[in-house]
Image (cartoon, rainbow, N blue to C red; front, side, top):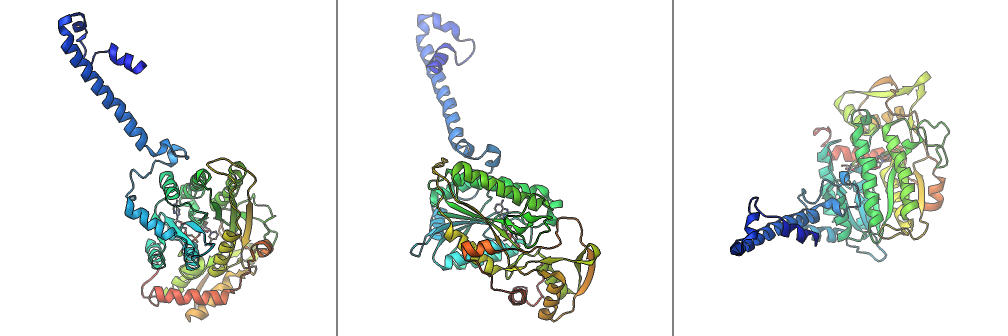
Length: 435
Ligand SMILES: NC(=O)c1ccc[n+]([C@@H]2O[C@H](COP(=O)([O-])OP(=O)(O)OC[C@H]3O[C@@H](n4cnc5c(N)ncnc54)[C@H](O)[C@@H]3O)[C@@H](O)[C@H]2O)c1
């Protein structure tokens, strides 16, 4: 009504008011009113047009997180949706449909393959960032395409995309592995950790809490949350409030954020604290990987030593064991209890260590690599720098053993053998060098 009044009282062009007083001016008055009405419709129409096109208008995520949207992306369309549905289609009885974030990553590739092989529906999501060799991520993508897993190229912060994926597929589970990994890189690019591990996590949880049905979420935390903890082995009951790196702090923040979404929205959440995962298709920024590359190149490799010649050791865990732990976590996850953003009852909230329970000094890792590569390493003993690395990690896995049936079976010697075989095959016996 007030809109109409506004139109009636105001001329479309300044200076035409006088005509209203003359009876002879009626046709022109009608003409002006028609013009005025026409432009008003155009104006109101354009407001509606922009309102409905705006992804943030209906987005559950704050607008700053959802700016990058379907509007500006190249995805969409019936063929794209068909690919998504085909990839996420469940092919076994009692199968689940899983959105795997970080699917082009090391762990994501292995978990996606294992899920697909047993008949679950799997859709991948990855932004293919260039933190490390993106050709390796593309090669993993090809591998997954062969097993029938499609990876949507996008960012977990793109709320409109995430919502669209849930509109297309009512995922029963999310395996959330997308993150900015690596401890030392946090000093170089701290905001990438906030972007993926905090903002991205919130973006994902926002979409999941609003989805109907809400999925159960299993996500990767890290052994790094134990930080400067000196009590071994690390147990889930130990303190995790003294992180040694920004990476660790963002993973710890993730665990607290998970608690909140479980408490308020009834999301079923399981955090997995992985301990130094290694294996074929691994990450080039990790020591076992770049040691292999540099030993083959004849370059010296840094071996860190803690104060007073203290040994630096890691609880290296083979990828197949981690995959079994991830699948067991998905299989034992109870349903989320909320729907459409409302909690209906208490939901499951779990945290597990997934390690190998047998820490190995890094110098022993190098000796194994020397034997497998048949090349002597040029060892450069250095003091452990204070850039986020901790002296040792050692997992207590009894909780995962009892509740998930998790039981690692691969020792470092066996696992590294498989890694080296893959490395030499992939990089052509070291002729094609890893970046
Ligand atoms: N590998 C390990 O030893 C280890 C140990 C502890 C925890 N973790 C955690 O396990 C998970 C998987 O690790 P990984 O070793 O496979 O790492 P990865 O870097 O190989 O895989 C992560 C993938 O996520 C993608 N990604 C990053 N940010 C994204 C974003 N904002 N949106 C969409 N995709 C994004 C990357 O492109 C990458 O392909 C991570 O959460 C990591 O922090 C790994």
